[in-house]
Image (cartoon, rainbow, N blue to C red):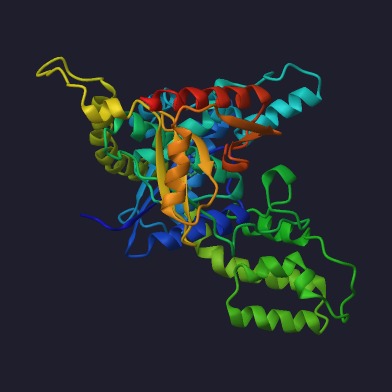
Length: 451
Ligand code: TRP
């Protein structure tokens, strides 16, 4: 049995990695993989790349560049499982199984899809203009990436937290529908590296290709130097004291310096080091730290077949985990061999699971609460806090008694009231229609509990 923490993350292969990608994602992931307790799965999200890019040359170049960046950065492929998403046919297959349990309403709420819809509406276009099913289903594919390998921790940027939460939601629903008491999927958690999450770009905003403010990573020393010379600084002249804490040049330096180097640089800025010289120092630091890796990078890029071999070994390792697991999942949903097929009895447990149920739990502060879950596992209500289990129990009993429900709507949420007090609340809904549907679902859920 392994108790190691499974860490999994992917990078969409549409661009050339820049300094921000390296410091914010790749470097911390490589470091994390060196921990003896880590079992790391890192991959090139090249199926995801097809969602935003229809230029085959660019996809291919980016896959190679990102692979070479991980390897040049010191990733030890003997320690980790490093692969291309598109080399694992089990992933699209799992995507379909998950697509069939993912609520459409859940995907309607995905930020990336919503942003595209909002943009269309603003432009007076059809809301779904130019939106592919790939973009819409993006979070389901990502859920498959994560759930396929039962990842515990998923290092991502802030914009991806919602997707990891969706993976939990979809995985939970699958567990509930087909697990028959067994939890097929581990619930993943997003991991945000606070200290390095965002490196500023040339203009001080987050370094990002979309702002065109990046510092190239491994292309060449000259490119790096040219970019550094374009870092925006204030207009203080050489000899004037600089304010390190309000300088993104200093922030960039910090991200690669030791504590001692950082303090020395801070002192020099305070004493009036000119910005030109400061840029020179930053270049020296980065070149010193990344120069060797740059060389490895260019070597790797000049021998693509070596990388191909490494990635095929990685795919084999990944599939050794994915294939038997997927076989189990196919079995669970009823895609089974016709041979040796015993008619599966409907267990009492499965029958019971077909109705809604109350699940109570205790908060850290000692109070008691409960959730009401629909037959499909969706949460219908979350109760307020009760001082003791007895009080919470009395409320669930009353809710099941068949008496008329007192449902009060407020904005896009509703509460259930008993004896003049709100006892439980719904989640927030996207629109009035979803709210109405949820109230209806609540009434249905509570009706059959009477007998
Ligand atoms: N969507 C992620 C991004 O654009 C990349 C990605 C795809 C990913 N699948 C993943 C990240 C699974 C973590 C886990 O950044």
